[in-house]
Image (cartoon, rainbow, N blue to C red):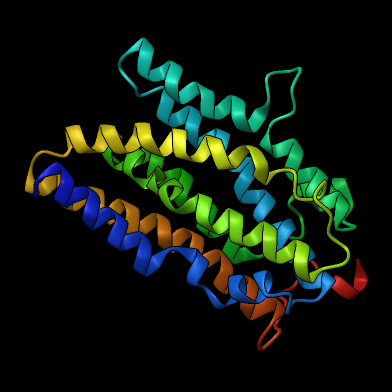
Length: 240
């Protein structure tokens, strides 16, 4: 494929597989979840958010040039903060607290679902163990993030009286950070995936990342929507 053809194939994967299509997200955005179900989402999603700097540090260590490492280091600072300005992890903790969750519980990851732990672990290991090109390609779900963020914020503010703009402050910076991050990663993939084998690996990497996100929502739906089987040790909303 040409670079344009590869990009079109990547975007087609997002149109088919991105987790904005998942039934749990549709319930979340349309106001059809209880407060406890929204809490379960925020609690489990925190584990994913908190693991992003770990996977990014692994990837950054493999980049060969100062300019490339500097580019990827910005992602870590976006999530961890710079010591003065809070990053995305702190903002997500504020989101969880705004929903009525205990900060210590969220940070401990003690109440998360097994599906969350396994999916996030698989993503971190993928970035660590696969080729640099595949690792970067797996981040390209950020191509599709701005649309879901806009839908999520507007829908949750409209439908839930226990949510405020301050609660959802995590998402505002991501509307600019995600396009910046995905633009660099897409340019890298377009320039480096120049053989059929590399292009196939890039497409498979993005499908894998979509599966990681989808699997987390599968776990949430199964435990907290239907059939409602919360596994031992996981967060129980009524007991929060």
